Image (tube, rainbow, N blue to C red; front, top):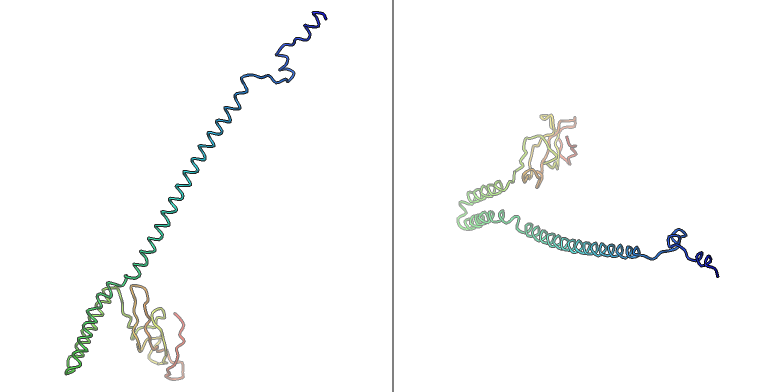
Length: 202
């Protein structure tokens, strides 16, 4: 074999790269470093997710405890909301018992005793914001009056309360009980009459 042939078989390493042949070198370490960085980032994210999950569970437990505490407080408020009113009514109850006890004797002073109790009871209700609705002689107001009968009369021009069968009461602006009333309406030609009322609002 000639020296020329031997020279042809020896190739420059650079030519191998030109032909697409893989060259093993230090670049093989780069993918491993990238994988490690990805794994580290993944571990960090997993730890952060776990922390957020624990925080969420704690907040959820705190909210549930808060909700239960609020329910207990509301229930307790409902049970004792009227305690002060009831407490102030007790002296009224005492005076009623005293009035009845006085009536079993000579019977004198019963009216005075009942009037005193009634005055005291009204004062208690007034202090607690209860307003009496006694609309005798006033224009009929279906928002606070309940008409159970009507009378046609010539001396009225608008529906007017002419009799109060049962007083109504407001608690502040809230209606506790409407006043039961009889309403006079202008005469329509048939004379005075009494019967179920059919009055429209306004």
